[in-house]
Length: 204
Image (cartoon, rainbow, N blue to C red; front, top):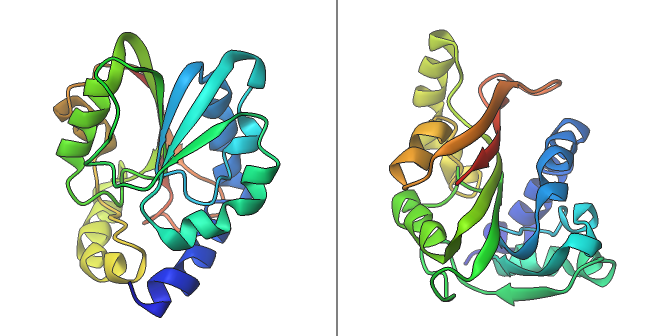
């Protein structure tokens, strides 16, 4: 891991993922988490203040980036819920089958290299009556913007921690074995359209 990935990129990601329009989407999904929660791509822990302690038993925080885990220390100290770190990528979830009540994905699926394996792993650990909550950015609804996303992504991902601008989030979730129960989508305010088309909702 180089200096940029370990020191500079975590600060950029933390700032981008804490912007007001992004936090509004987090506020729409994180409080719905219940029971034993697996947060995939916990990052700097910006979701932690949004969990409802009265309905969450604990949170497994999956985050492979040392720089992001370092950034999370302040939020961890103020967390209303117990957090157990899992220093592994989404493709290697070290939990038993049917052991999780809620899987949480917020602005993470864009960066996972082997997204299909990761989603299959989430499906495996999620209980039959469990929920996957998501708020993600991805492929825009407008073909003109889509063309720009496809064109820019190969360069963008090299400087943005592997972030893909052009992933079709609902399609990925379905390919990963999930059924989408609720879905909303739109362009987020105050963001460039190539990076600001968002999806949020629930799947099972």
